[in-house]
Amino acid sequence: MIVGRELKVSESRTRWLLISFLISALLLLLLVGSLLHTQRTLARFEATHIELEHAAGELLVHIQGLQSSARLAASTGDLNWRQRHKSHRRAAHRILERVGELASTVALGGTLDTLRERLDEAEGLYREVFSAIVRGEVEEAEAILKGWPYVRNRRALRNSSEALSRLLREDVRSRIAVEQQLVRSTMAAAAALSVVMLFCWYMSLRRWSVHLRQRQEKEAEVRYLSYHDGLTGLKNRRGFLEAAEEAVSRSVRYGRPLSALLLDVDYFKQVNDTYGHVAGDRVLARLAELLGGELRDCDVLGRFGGEEFGVLLPETDRQGALQLAERIRDRVAEMAVDDGGYRIRITVSLGVAEMDAGIAEVDGLLRAADDALYKAKDVGRDRVVANQGA
Image (cartoon, rainbow, N blue to C red; front, side):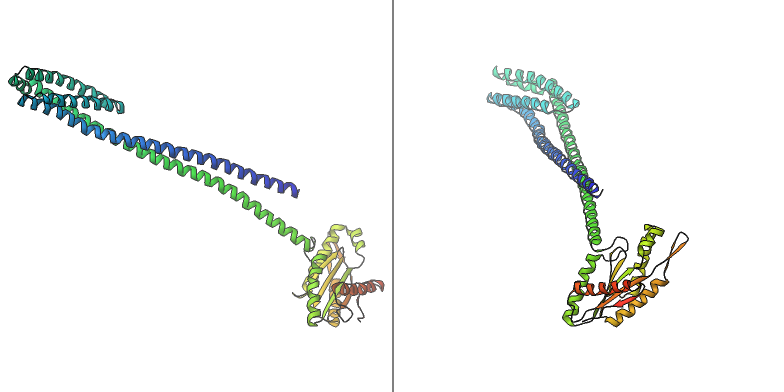
């Protein structure tokens, strides 16, 4: 069961890591693609802005050039201005064509058509002016430029060109607004993608943290159970022996007294057979609780297995250990464990041993206590026996 649970947790953690990686990679690709698209769009908008702004200004310059070159040719009779006039005309038509390609509104297209018509109408008048100059009729050329058709056309041309310039500026502003909206949308998309990516990594790290905490708890539980008894919570034989090694080492090094008790429940098999193993476990748990209440913080208490317990008593000689053992025996004899209307009573036998010149290690101390316990049980149980020492 534990292995299966560990595998499920590991699979869940791996799945979340894989999902987080894939989503992060996808989101990064989308983000990079969006940023590249925005960059290209902004560059295209920037180029279009500049071109439209230049077109608006240059168109007015070339329209004014058309008019001024015709007036100068008529006033001076110099046909060299005719070439300048043609140059302005070609430039004006080129600008109109380019603006038509960049136009993004219907109104702008209609204004372009109107302006072309005005330029074509003006061109007819300019041809008459230059024809008169070629014939040497300068006064007739000036009269055409002062006539109502030309004046009306010039006003209409100026109004159309100004309207086109205004629409071009509005078009630039609308493109800038679109550009700003695109930047905001890109930033919002980047923020949303970042939030999703962070959420995925948060879930992955959360699963990782849960797995790590569960693993640490399991390791702590395994460590605890490797040194403690599952029924009573006391140290098991392994935990007791490790603690005893340290206590014996200090006793030998500093020449301090150290004693040990071994305790065994008398006729415990009869308790199990009569009341059941559950009742027997309850008796052992109650006995462990009683023993813990009789000992000091520095004392070491452990369950060796079954109904056998061990006690290590630092700074305690044989006499002190005997007194404690007798008190424990009396308290156990007075103890009663309720079990479904029955009151279970038990007695214990105890063996006492003290570190002396003949004992220099844990095994020797516990062996001496075990010999004393065997004698206590052999002579009738429910009693305390101490080893005789060296």
